Image (cartoon, rainbow over all chains, first blue to last red):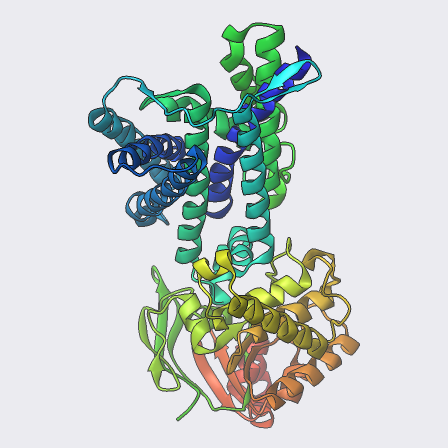
Length: 300
Length: 259
């Protein structure tokens, strides 16, 4: 039981972590809680279904469903990345320099728009996500870890490792960190801050797109509303780890997944969401800077 | 053609004229000192030149091209770098990374290149790292490249800021009170460094309050007071200028001297 709940928790948590990264990266750079980010994740899931449908209607048969999955993930990353950049351009950039409330309200507007757009375009009902995993999984200490769970964890770890490399080893990563620390100074040393912000939205949204596909496969059903709860959960994870802090978002995501799974397993699965949001409230009261975040008073 | 030519530059905040019709030229290979009492508008002038604040009126020409209306990163790309009086390093980055960030505007690789990292990009980054190390040696920070910027002692942080500003291959370097908070030995070392910077073909315009230093190092001084240029000339001429003495010591002191 314990091991099974840990496996479930880590699976869910690694997805939360992927989404939380988008929140935290954007916040780290422009101090905006991008409430439309959950919707990007939802768009990723839909893009997965659409791509799969296209591949099927084109009668493209693949030796394994793995190739189809790979194409779906790449398409979702590209599409979500483009959406993220476009949203920033249209809804946030014109409001830069306005009061902090203005882009926040704009973000809520984008979120409502995207939910309703997908509801109208794709219908309000649940859609089945194609089964692409035939694998049986393996037994571990008397518990079962399914192939799809292994895939989700492995993909998440890979993505997070790639992100760490990008942020610490590359030019754009250095530019992102510099911009997060002092945007004006970054501009003065020659960094085009607008491009850095676009790149941040691109990367965060692409990660959310992958998360959307993986959750779609995991639960087998998606609808236009899945971005809402997942978005708030991932936001909680980002706050738990310390918003603006990249390793914090990873840690926060995994912890939140574990807390939910253990709470659901040992107390009641009905209260799953209550645990997550109780955590949010407690963190905001007792440690608003999060587990790995800097003391907020020091930043100002 | 002068390297930097400022014509009738004015900047008002509401009713306050922070800079008022200032003309200023800097020739290539000069070291020009910008002095004046607190609130004279010296840093504001730097802010206008580097694109942080758009001037209300007037023109800023760099090699004959207008800088007015450009963003700070575009000004940096043209070859103008600066430091700050209150040091503004990227504290949560290493010493080496701080300098490398300063050189990024000279790199060609874009976002896609950074992600897929073809050989040319890796080579470019290695070249930048080598250049950054050379600059750290130049300013006297060798062996400290892997420390966090915030770990450096105060004087070293100032040197790092200069190295970062130089990483963008500037032709014009604006130094805002580089000797602020330094002891006499450190100040002497800094004067030495500024001479070496000029030898590398970089023109220096500096704001400084330590008179001994700025008089000793500048070819020419420009004096601002209340946003207006009140004097300009060699250090000797400026030192003897009654308007300058008045601005620093108060008008009464001139009355006392002459009367």
